[in-house]
Image 1 (tube, one colour):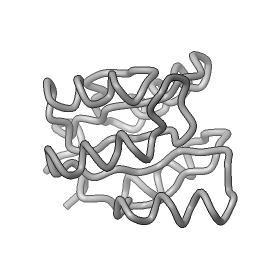
Image 2: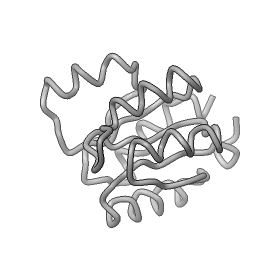
Image 3: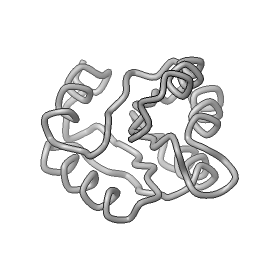
Length: 125
């Protein structure tokens, strides 16, 4: 798949972080199909757009966290997830492992870290 053909769904509840992430991903040559702030919205947009990858914040506002949303997205649509988090706690990471993520990006976002994970994901195969 060509980089420009790959669609990424951003799930980030902090508007400034979502803006930065959106810009970084587009600057790297990928397409952002949607950017949402909650786990519930991420499921709706995943169904609508069927992205190639979801970049999912673990701690989201609302009733559903990113791990719960990622599990549903993986089970219903088979879409892989890369987690984005400021929380490097071992317990959180261990809980997230059950959803078989492609990796974890630690906030704050930067192009170098994103390039490592997106470059080794299924997007560039």
